[in-house]
Length: 377
Ligand code: NAD
Ligand code: WQD
Image 1 (cartoon, rainbow, N blue to C red):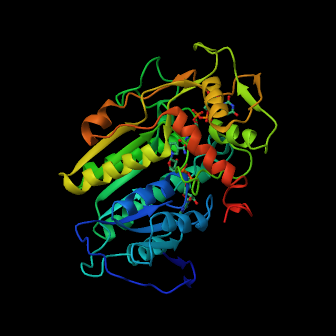
Image 2: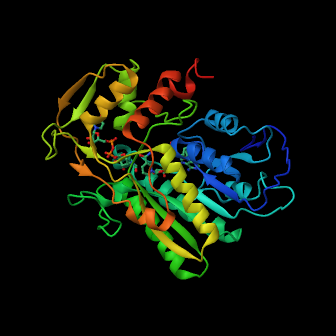
């Protein structure tokens, strides 16, 4: 792995050749983050060569060092990391021009997976302009750079948050897009931007992937989710209670119209999600231009208390809970209809809730303070 810092190379390139030249040369924005790092690993294991562009505003380069280690990369030939911002044309050009391409078939970036963005709902209410700037402005800069560099294949990280308060039952992609917070608005706007671009000129291959609730970690426990500060989401909160970093979980409402009164979500193992991205980019690389919109979820709903019990079982630790008030903006139940992704990509989730908890616990136990842990090196 080589890292190109904003100011210059940290280590010199070793452009060893990749003999599998049918494999693609891809740009991953936000590839050091939670979903990006797991996807980068799956893509490297599939033989692709990657340039990661990340400003490390919510991640650490350590995740990518571990990705390189897990992928068994013995040199810098297939992973180049560019430290930079998706809102900067110069940083994007550096990424498009960076190494990691097979030496025997030099070619430019053939596809982009765009994870970089901000994702905290509460923060988006406080700082909506930042969310529009990074999530919408950043996507616009990226698309402009793709046009400059002749690349028209893009997988975009969208979110089930677009569905707002959905009707009861599994949610198909045809459900109304009616976000209820600035984060959701920014994702809806970026989706619309991509549809407008695809409609304005021929040749674009775009997949807008709407994730439900990504959780868990790589089974090695070497990479995982590393939220800064107090976690906003349920799964990392439960993990931190189990490992002793927090005393108890506050359950946001016990009076929802669900079987046990707690909120129901569609939790998807991050490795299943990563494999969904591989399926999506493979599809874009091999099919005619198209604009896809796909839910990535399991189709199974689990309540807060079910997840707590599954985590206790996997970890052998107790997770004390207290039922509190509902959180503003929450829906009772959000579960994907993932059938379109199965038809179009031939992809479906394979991992159970028990595996999600086992792997999430492997990460949390080995890295109690995330990538910053003194015991995690
Ligand atoms: P993450 O914060 O772990 O990863 C995002 C990465 O983007 C980080 O490494 C961060 O440093 C980087 N980044 C942020 N702003 C940047 C900028 N201006 N320039 C360059 N890099 C920048 O988040 P994640 O959970 O991996 O989510 C990835 C994507 O998936 C996001 O777009 C998010 O909105 C979307 N998504 C996440 C979830 C979820 O629950 N995790 C659900 C649905 C959709
Ligand atoms: C899950 C359930 C809570 C925390 C959010 C974003 C969404 C997407 C995924 C990016 C709910 C309950 C939670 C806690 C609790 N992210 N809960 N105590 O709300 O489905 O979705 O993350 O796109 O945009 O909104 O996920 O993990 O926050 O909550 O009881 O401390 O857990 O009420 O029922 P959510 P979550």
